[in-house]
Every structure is written in C-alpha cells, then in structure tokens.
Image (tube, rainbow, N blue to C red; front, side, top):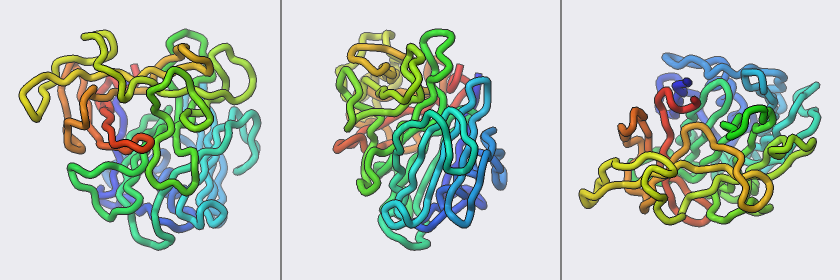
Length: 305
C-alpha cells in the first residue's frame, strides 16, 4: 500500500515552472528524486542528465523499473513545451531501446521566467502532473489546462511486466489537452496513452486508453465508490474508477493508480477531499480534450494497492 507524495507550486521552496530551458527537468528532479523543504523525493532516480541542454532521463523504482527521457529546450514549441519518451532501457540521456512515440507537456503560454501553477502527485512508480499554463495562480473553481500521467499502471493480470504508460499530451502546441482519457471503446492516434508493450507482451510500443469519463453513471458498486454527498443539491455523487484498455477494442488491461472520476459535471472544487470507503480522494478540475471535466485522486494508502 502506497501513500503518494503531493508537490505544489505554492509549497515553501518549491521549484518554479516556466517556459525556459530545463525548467521542467529541474522540477521533476526536485519532486521525484531530490525533494525540497518539507517534501521528500518520491523515490525515482536520475539515470542521465544534461542540464545545459535541458535533458534528463528518470528511472522508476521496482522490479519493472523503466526510463522516461524528458527534454525541455528550444527544440519544442520555443521552450513552452517539453517532450517525454518512455523506454525499456537507456544508454545515454537521449538514447534508448524499445521506446514509445514522443508525447508532450504544454508548460507555459509564454517564453519567459513567469512561474505557472503546477502540482505533482507521485510515488516511486508513477506521477500525475497538473499544469495551469496560462495562469499565475489557481482558484478553487479554475480548470487545470494540462493533466497527465506517466509511470506504472496496475495490471489486472499477474505477470504483466510492461504496463508502463505515457499519458501526456499528443501535440506540442495545444495548450489545453488530456489525450489519456476518452469515452470510446478503443484507443486511437488522436485519443490514447502509449505503453511499452501490449498485454500479450509483444515487443514494441502499443496504445491504450483510460475509459469511463463522460459515460453514464456506473452500476452501484461496480466501478468505484458510491455515496459521497453531492455538494450542490444534497443528493449522492456516484464515483467511478477509470479502467485502462489494451490495444484492441473492448479490451481491459487494468487501472492507473488511485484515479477516479465523479459521474456528474465537476461537482467539487479543486483540492476538496472526500472521505469514502476508507479512501481519501482529492478533487481536481481538468480540461479533458475539448471539454471541462474532473478527476479524483486517491491520496491515501489505497493509491497503489
């Protein structure tokens, strides 16, 4: 059982995220590896580093540890975005074997030292990233422009050793996006996460997707937690758990750690904590594709069973 670490832009001594070379790399190293005031690192390690060139390769922990190669420099959207690629193994900061297609994190709408609100929720095996790339602060009702996940999933079947995913942005220049969550029955080039191998273990990157957001309320008890008070009208909120498909239609691979969603129109303010079923879920308003939505992250020991 894993309780995740929570890192925020407004923590004491938190790193600044801006549209400048290496800013995102330094932020990830501070949060996932080194830690900062009153915050320990999440348990990742730095495999390779090129600070001057805005590059870092990070390795997750555990028996299925893999590598995430990150670049934040002038080569992508004039420093306003970063690239991330997932590899099975690496031999240098930008050299890996059996990698996924590159994905993107849109960090700032400007190329300047102006800091942007951000949050990372992480353990030693994976991390959720939230960015408000056009703001300098975040209100309780404001939607995060960017939301994604990179790290190890929770497989439904034992022996699935390649369920490492990259669920970030699919465009370097689209400021509001979340390609990892969709309401269709199979991933596609425009709505997907990338994964090292499919559920059968075939060598080579494959696609998968979180399914469930925007769908009708799940059957009581079938997809997640039920019974949290609905804050606007006194009724109940039904909370579903987002499943992850494999690379074919109507398939099922597992879940992402601690990821739920309310089957309603963003009923909770940002950072609201809901206690239900022995879990503590923290609400965040996020932009999913072209729509506004909401996710709930389990920040208690049930984050990664």
